[in-house]
Image (cartoon, rainbow, N blue to C red):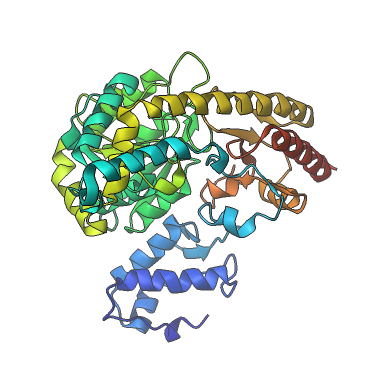
Length: 468
């Protein structure tokens, strides 16, 4: 790659360091820059491109935080592109699923169990009741009666006490994370996340040019000792966690861990982002604890999505926002999309008030618990091959550790050729993590009983082939 020939556009709205980051990233992904290649010295490249040193430093740091290069003290920055190809969780299913392929990759429900009739009733009732007002702009933070019923729901079922004024309706969890990133982060700010974690969240944080610091998980939640050490050094603005049926590991945080996180948030002055998508899907009598329920200092930004529980195409969820951030979040929401669909807001409000949500949730839990038990029984067959996993007792997924020497990505490719789609752990770990290629995630959400049995049989054959 001829670095001197790189063209940066100073008139563009995109910062120069991000332009440089993108061009070097493209060269790495296209193999123009090979693993081990040493990038030009910062001062020399800055001089060649007629930019200041900070521009090059920020570009290199962004490459490092994204896993494309690593720095060696006193030596420079070296290309460390992973050996396994990059695949995106956001685009994998539609671009990869073959006809008749069994899909263990998606955690979204099958359209056959969508509550179409009951939701259609609510849509029709709202149009008849509200006429043209159903199609007008809502308040930026959402239809107030819906926010009121959601506050009641959180109090009753999650032990979360909040007011309707602190609830913001968003177009799904991903928009919620994006609004959080835009409202709270500036270039160079640190965000701490679990590892492994949901890459849609880390991508949103990186889009603000923030720096990601990862902390390992224990059976009780994030490793508090490692966490405090890193927080003390990097002073993060945000800490992103999934405390209930974590994606992808399926673990639930212990109450002690939740309380300690809140104490550390107060001590080191950061906000916690709690992402909750499937906490209602507990298949035991003990529901998992919520971080927000323990939040007496207003340190938690809570995200709730209905995509996994209702219908993903509705694109609806909500945030519970700390008081100190409320004005900032409202302005960001207005700039993002002015207001989301009033018809959907009003219809979901009626869906809750007529108790159709409770009926639907009971129905979903009955269906999902049956699928969960079936997949759990089938997975027992894999233990003889050296596969290990924890029993999550809820959620929509299983997280399997593969036998030593078996590549998750190669298993993904082998399963795909055999008509089964799984998710390799390369999607959830940073490029340099030692466990990056050792796990797979399986979801039973879109599958029927026959597909679950056949899918695990295919997986068993592919594992045996990989071990032979």
